[in-house]
Image (cartoon, rainbow, N blue to C red; front, side, top):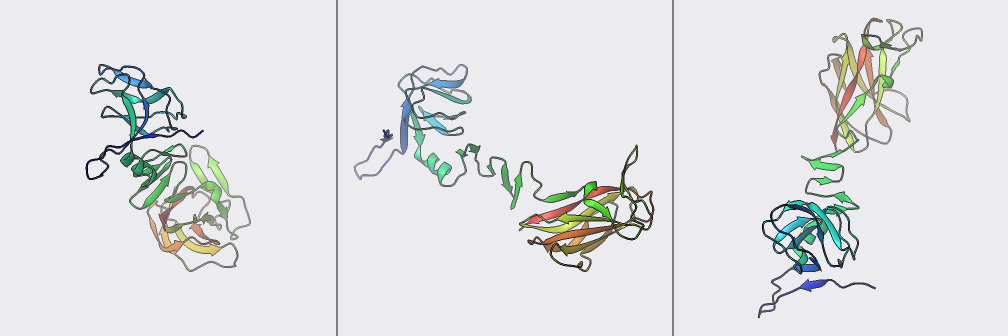
Amino acid sequence: MIKRTSILVQDDPLGRNINNEIQIASLSDDYDETSAITTIAVTATQIDLKDGDNINIAGQSLVVNADAAAGATSLTIDSITLTSPIVTGEQIRINEENLFEQYQRKTEGTIAGMPVDDRNLGPINYTGGDYSIIGVDPTYVKILPRDFMINEDGGYEALEFKDASNTGLQVGNADQEMVATVNIPYGTTATEVYVWGSVTTKVVDVHECDVDANGKSATLGTGTTNGSAISLTSTVSTATNYLLIIVKVTATSNRIYGGKVTLTQN
């Protein structure tokens, strides 16, 4: 059976609706303004409520703190100290304008259980034209030691990670260079590269390559291993491209710690 919600409508002589609230239940207990409350007893609710929903009781706004199915007789709310008492029989209402904010503009309430406001949807934040997601690096990619390999200039000696008091990657032959290959995530553009090393004057060249073709591009940017930004010819992600970063170490004692690629979101 579908339960009908009671829409509290008061019309003036011209037929205009001057009340825009929906009654969903009534209080079944009394609460005073002397201490904070976190739950309220109610008559069976007529609709499902979600964490983050706003309800109104006697002109006071409360925020639901946990999902409650239709028929619930207790609601968990964000801790609040009332400004005036509320008593048994007070109507619990949801404001239709507030529902418009929640479900039309999606700036309040929850979606699939994720809290929503004007900048956030659960773990996703949107500020200044950029999206940020908890657990994801949307505006940079770290270049880790594992991302490097050697080129063919030596005798194919191993690339080693020194794990003593002085850490970092070292080549096994001074003729070798370190080469990192870094993906450009979908929907982004690579704009800068940073590389850090124990010797800050080693040359770094950056190129574009493709997984489905031979060869590398002309140099997109050149800098050194001092950790300063190496400005690139902006390189938009495609289905096949990636960055080729060549670090021209000149001795087996030159250690590379890692690097970073700066991204902008398209």
